[in-house]
Length: 111
Length: 114
Image (cartoon, rainbow over all chains, first blue to last red; front, side, top):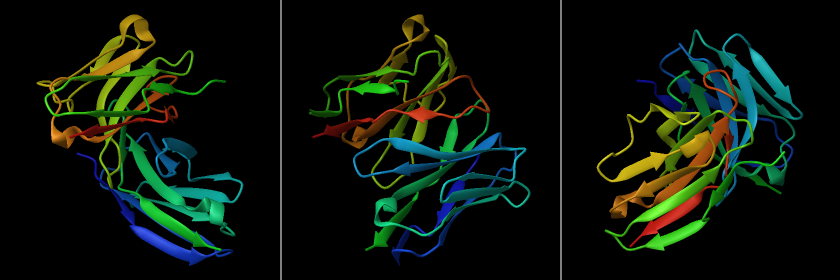
């Protein structure tokens, strides 16, 4: 059974800093890895999807990488802004099993 | 393109009562998912539909939860009778197909069981 772990559970940094969120998974036989953002009381917003054959994806200030062999993914946020404050979730896609989520990293960007 | 729609957004019921949630996926999306998100946790898959057929319901508490997707479009998730531990956000998601495709989530229904 796939298990997804996110470190750290919470992070608070000053505005403007670059930061890295970590995600690890136990079963490397994944189809894809998806990063989401969740604002308080809201649903999930998809940020980046990395297929199993890809190494990374970029969108604006966000860059996500995937290393299947080591069971790791990272989300890099450049030049952080207060509007980036949210909970970030990673999820592994195993084909027929839907997504398996980590517990998330609660990020606060201090103005 | 309209996103995934869910209703109601909030629901408060007493234990042992019944409740139903509705989801309308993105047009053309064949695969529909229901997830349960308990406070402080990541979402957990409850059931997955491909068109109007169930693909995976292994984590659905079938003694109290049921779901259907008639005609392969809208879906309803029902809880009867509700327990205190069912308090959570119920999220619906859809994708073009299974496996490699991106999932898009609705705003969720926040259920409080008292």
